Image (tube, rainbow, N blue to C red; front, side):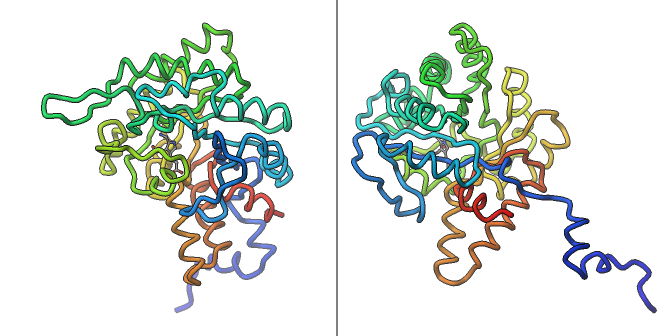
Length: 327
Ligand code: PBG
């Protein structure tokens, strides 16, 4: 018998395929992460993330302009300080690396939206995302409430430096409320919070920890980041951040958590961000370098899948490359 239903009718020609395409990536969807290193004289290649660099503040303006010229309209800034300490005081230093970088970028490329990642792990000697203490058995525990005050201070310092959006990535309970309160009190009621709301303890952050020199010296992050097996908990984390005043909710990583992105899209009215993280980027590049994958096609497929699942914005190391290639 002949088939009655023939979806292939719409697939047969490019024009029909284009007319009926459901998901389209645009330059407006993309955010480029950007690493800034204190004390650096020249851009340093990040070994585990080919094509990505740590930038000196002095060359940030140039790189910011290149990104803006690609059509990408927003960056997510990460600072790598020269000195770290137990508390991570570099995070709230008004002359700290991320503050200098935000000022430099806003001065040179004012139209580029600057989102600052807010966490302590790049700034602490131990590499954890909060204040640590040892428990009776000698294991490192990250203390929630004392961390909130430090995050709030760092958020205000970032806003003062010109950050357009503050993006807390620490996963402490109650941090969005604490940061919102501190920003409001300091006169930054109009500065939005992009919360890393559903952030899993993922192996795919591996290359980033080289890029940001932020690997925990002992222990891991499973005491504060989420367990891969949990989906309802992710929705609860997102709900809490939304109630506490987050303006945009993020799911991270992206491909390994597409189901969460889809569930969140159905459940929340909030704008949703997805972070295609360092390991997601590096594994595609590594396979492409071996000739096992087509780099461009794999890039488009993953970015489109992330958008199809429900992301309004995508933070990706491919941002500038994708923007340049978009029609
Ligand atoms: C800081 C932070 C991390 C990432 C973003 N912010 C690392 C981590 O939580 O260990 C990961 C980004 C990436 O892998 O691209 N807490």
